[in-house]
Length: 533
Image (tube, rainbow, N blue to C red; front, side, top):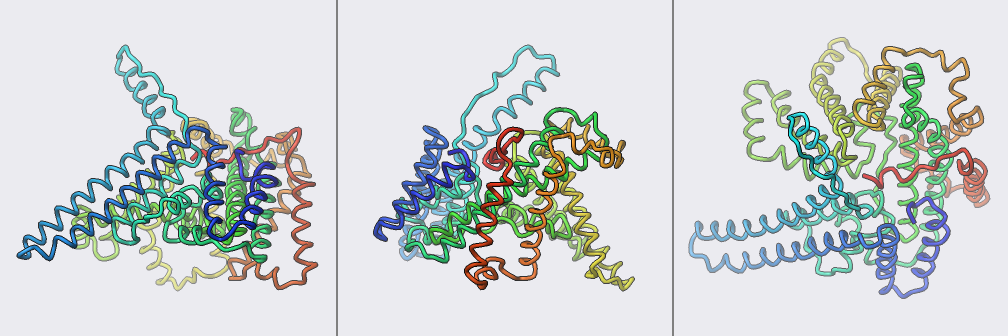
């Protein structure tokens, strides 16, 4: 199948699943979704579905062990004679639970690391060995990864961790856990769902409702419009700048334009795919968490990452940031720092260290390469500087009686944030860190607007018509985002209009996809970008 935005998925797989789901009894519906999900994984990965089976079974059995161990601990406590003995019993059972949970989490994260990062680490090891003058080289390993392994591995870790912490009960129903781990709309590109949010809803699914179906179709059409009309159209020009090593022939203006266009392409592809994912879930009455919340309205890098890939950010916050900051060494560091640095800056050393861990993981999660590690470090530095400067800037604005909520200043902060994001994405999309720095050097030292006026921007795979189409869809996406920023649901607003208006909007989107979609000779459709992460 390869993609959610493909004819085989949209016109064959999804309709067949919806029809079968509609006609079977309620008790069979979850099994229809589970069977469809396994077929989807098999179609995308073939025999590498074995990775998914290992992950699902391992966390299922480990969670049951934790639950049984907690029960045995409760049964053993009343027989204890004193407080110290009870404490020893609790410690004994807690140690066993921690060992099992740690072993399973390390095994699953380790499997992910071997499949995705072994080539990167071996290649760098060989470089170090060569520089030291040694004679041998380690052969680069070759592994095939199951599609979506990063997403379902993080879901598995969150489930087992929450069972261990007592936030949720262990699921005795293997089928329900397997459906949570494999639901076909989310298996390839997320969002990263939590067990407590989606598992019960998936298993106790009802019949398809008309409103859910229409809302789902609207969301799917909107996502396809963003991906096929904008992202695929931009890919020709973005590829000519980033992938053909022609950046040295361009001035800095073109490099910056390429960074901006790639950022738009990435957003339109990823958010468009997520629209299709959420719309697919809505058809079956399943609410999949939002992964974007108008990120380009952000006034700071911190806010941007609270609005972009939301489920990944919250996963890192809950399972990396908080555990690090709440560890004994970090608590001790914070206590000592408060005495020396005061209330405002005292907690910052521990927070900055935890953020460093988060952004190292974030960079590596996006890819095995120094450019991705730098991408994470880049955002870590910007966020850390923002945290350090915030108390000072707040005090200065208060002293000068400056209202930071005024529109001109808000626009300035939004534009500033967007520029910083685009520069980060330039490194993210480069072919290696050294190439990223070369492009940045051209951007800084040779920046002119000459190419915007001599027609050069129309010689890289996009003509005036392409720009007009792209700007029209961007204007539509901006208008929808603006409505959401003002607390208005575009689809609820549309649902209140006359039926002719509703169907006219849907028909217009479909016709725009058919007429203006970037497919055929001259275009390079984008593969699912985040399916590779």
